[in-house]
Image 1 (cartoon, rainbow, N blue to C red):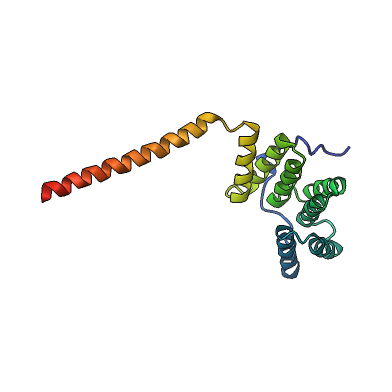
Image 2: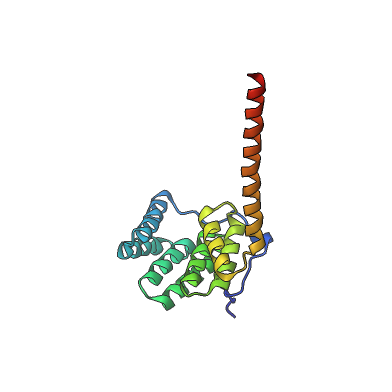
Length: 178
């Protein structure tokens, strides 16, 4: 039986920092894959990923990034299989879960993308890219409640008013001194 990755949410007890680390040379190559993806040089990214996967065929993050690049090239089925195998090989990687969320987001499968981003946030709680993508999706889906937005706006308004009150009191104190 294959595990169903569509509706999986990782329990906190399974999370840890036990991910397989690549050697320095391959880490630099992995950074080249990310840079190639960001610069839309997909063929170079695929070649670099293949060279890493020759040495380390079960490296989940590399499989996921190769899948993300293939998804951008229009090979969606192959990309989904690679990303699933990447998550399967490295469940504790925030990169794998983030990429899995990006694949779901590109397929307009927003609820599953949100689940993937939440799994990524369990692993790396302070990742600004994941937080940004998750909040964007929650606004699109409507799960980010309007009252949260109202609370944030009220806090900002309170801070602005508080600043003006302090400024006004400070000005009055200066006038008393003069």
